Length: 167
Image (cartoon, rainbow, N blue to C red; front, side, top):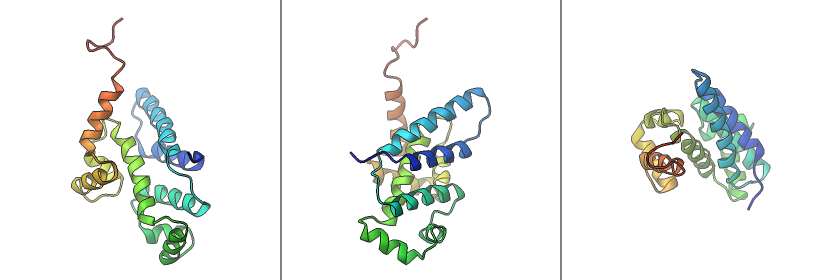
């Protein structure tokens, strides 16, 4: 398995810290849990050459700002969109696949939070409407966002007896 990507994990944790509103002490604890989980998810992404890592990082940073376009990321990296595409292709990557990786990992994280509506997840990831996000998420994972959320809730509660916690 490839080496974990600490920088990308750190970036996503920072993105989540900036992106989630903390209304109470419980919210702060939840935010730390999300950040830790972001590290675990991103460790599963394959580590690539420096340009690939910088591109992933730039996509994540710009995703939060609402413009994760190829042109915007290329500008941030100090190159043209065509040059970035060409260099990524030479390394065996494509811009769209990297953008999808970052969006999919972030979407999974957001969907684990029941208080973030699916429509809001779509918006946070830069989709114009929830139906476009639903189709993209299904393409990435093979399931709908609602089903992924339900599956997560089921797996998160596996250790709790059906009658709830007992004291």
